Image 1 (tube, rainbow over the protein chains, first blue to last red):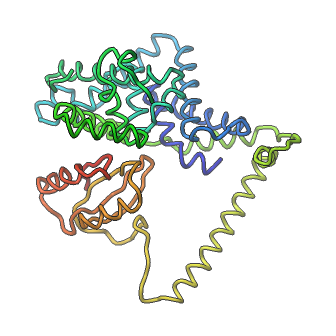
Image 2: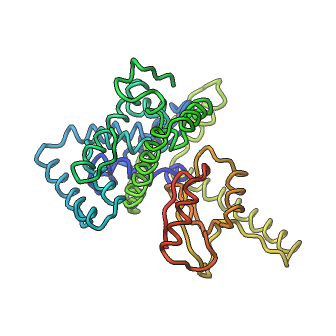
Image 3: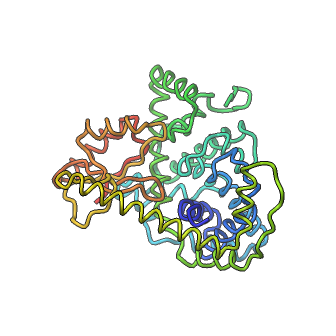
Length: 166
Length: 225
């Protein structure tokens, strides 16, 4: 368990943090995730990577917590997460830091779109693995990723970055 | 992995695969299909550059999120300690029996067993290291990512290698570009790589990084200090 925790806890934490947008909640949740893994170790059939299994459990727990939270609390947390000290997209653009604009716009995506972009780009999950984690068909994974990227391009355009696509 | 035009209202089959191609998570067959299409279609290649840009910034964004405090681990192991010891069940499957055997041990027992195993491994390592040093004291060996107390001079980049890249590909890449791994991998699979033996202006480093980015072995690259 210590090895599993050491190997995966940072990535699982970051995945949960991007969904929850609250560090303390994300920390509490990852200990719950690994406790579940400890309890269900016998059920792991090894058909998928351990990280895929962990992310699926983490996602389920995060969504359960989000469903239980009152709207007002969620709004406060979201606002707190948005008010970070880095430059806003316009300021970053003025400084010609396109990467910073892109990162800022990535945070502006919906939870659904943020999730799929993180799973594909950061967690290096294949179409099949994303389908397993999110619980949607493989074809939907591909179209959701496409629309997430399209939305990102729209947000970038709103902030003055025209990419000529879509 | 059989997307069809019917399933994809917008964006062709190949275009939809670009994010996975950039992340290196496509099957060999699909990766080849994308490569062929990219070679023939300049517009698709331009869009692929956008995908790579998104991939790089998504990694950067996630890397800035930090790591959980030790509190998360303490909380987990306190909860595991509080768990009741499990009763082993009879099973014919060897894997299941092994899993159940470990599950049946109390967390404390497991922790002690793990500590004993770690100690045994460390002792073995110490003996092996001692033998190796005795055998060849002049030619020291150090892993690429072994931490060194002496500060390393030069210019550096953070690199995440493509999952499709083999060890031989990475070695060749490092040799060709006279680069060396200084540390890593981090939790995000990133390596700190020395790309020049002396400090160089930022513009020169950016040019080197841009050139290295073209290599298929590189999944993500960014300058670092």
